[in-house]
Image (cartoon, rainbow, N blue to C red; front, side, top):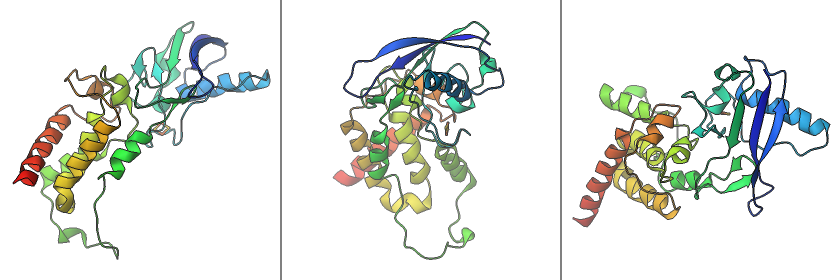
Length: 248
Ligand code: FES
């Protein structure tokens, strides 16, 4: 395949950015999207140009590091992570626009790399359980009803990639935050910090400058792990419950 790539280039957070156009040839349909970018970078390095900076780590759809807006869609045309997107989703001769996540809470670091540490700070605010150290407790010591276990597992699938924020017209992080709250709040292990968790994490989310949810649903559509939109309603319910309990 021969492709025209229009790639966002930006030297650093303070420099102005712009789209640059590159031609790449000999791209196999079996390559992943990131392997296609590796090919571009090899060519850029050979001619002495600065390679395109982009985030990646596992390249297996697990870590959530990869983060590209491809032809206007977070993670591209398939419902998967950028690293699991393959070039068979494109046609020979295509022009592909490649941009970083677009959200004021995710400032561009360089080219296609954005700073997603806002997510880390939301997790630090309460996305954990406090447990005494020691050997792992016996699994049956704390029974968890099957529907609760399924609910927790569904939300624990969030890999924190940020596609929800990038896809949302408001730059809202409510799908991410709700996934992280819901998967702990429903479990008995998460009960001791149930109220402080939701209040602190939502407070941190707001202070990071993410927008609010207006239920457009783009977040759930873009999520490569299928976190459902009602996750946000469940978080709002938790937040209301917590505020009432704290005020009582
Ligand atoms: S590189 Fe880890 S999910 Fe894509």
